[in-house]
Image (cartoon, rainbow, N blue to C red; front, side, top):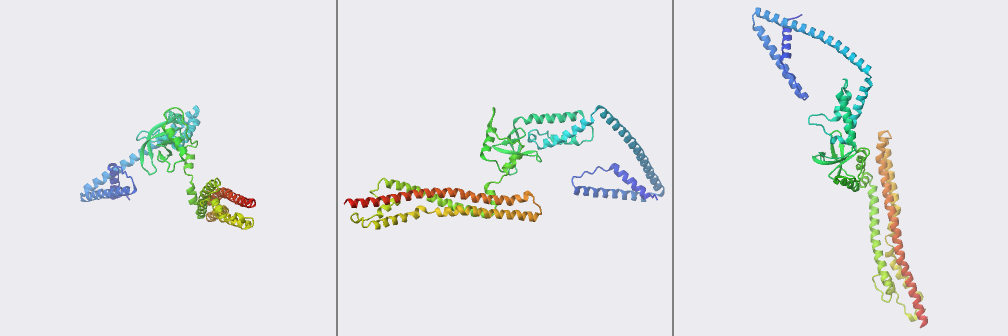
Length: 463
């Protein structure tokens, strides 16, 4: 049943649709506030109309009711006319689209347009990831070139001549820039997050350097960023040479994977990171190696000095000194030349005692080095076992043999093995060197003591 109140509400709503401005909200809270305010305004207008209607006389009320019904009927007629026009326009649009498709098929352009959209989509992805986009930036307020091509690839309309030319232009510009070494100014994001305007030297789409540092391209930010960890000094030297060159040919490093290899290279953990990643057994291996290395250095310096002093003593056997093993052995020989034949056994024992007294000093640290050589691989084996335990635990916890989960444990196992062998092999050579040096001094002592004893016995026979 149609009442005056319902007709009045229809009239009020129609009036509000014509008079109220469009609500524009940037977030949900603002939208809720705007809707609440609009509903309050509608209710206020409705109450004013109700009050006006109730205050009017019966004749005026009938006139207002007739006017509202007339507006409703007019709007209904207008709505029906618009619906008929909309349906007619849809029929015309379908006919026009069919005629356009027929013409496209007749010209053989269906595959061309489909291929153009595919090329635009592929090129959009390539340009978004391309280092060259840091130089070929759009004008302020314009979308990036990759976004323009993405819109062309997803457009439902038939590509125009301008669209096809834009695809060709961007492809040609990317090809030309890929073979150039360019220097330009652009924003560079530093490791701390600050953005600075810097001079960048770009080698095609492969890599870029600025201020002697290699840069990475961030497609999301559409800008260059400095690698938090830079490559080794030799690669940095190539980058500085490229940056300082103005003409001619310069040898430099080129990442054929367009930044992927450089990113993997700079993220490669250092030896310190690998040791920290392993178990505590790595620190035990390093401690054993450090103690053995210090013992080797101390004994090596001592033996070199002893050999020099013994060499000097050999040149002056008549004046033995107490600052070298040979001199102390010569001073220990105090046999009586007249009774040397009868006391030769005692003299030999005194000489043997003096030589034996020098041996511990000459051979010290060799036992420690031999122990370290044997303990290094065994400690590495312990680390290997611990790493494999970690690997099996990760497989058990995750329920899968994902290589990424297994890599941590395997890496810890391998670094322990490398450290164990790394300290054992150098110490093995060091122990052999100390043994050779000490045997050289011991041989001199034995030769000189035997010669000294024989010379004394001969001198006694001559007397």
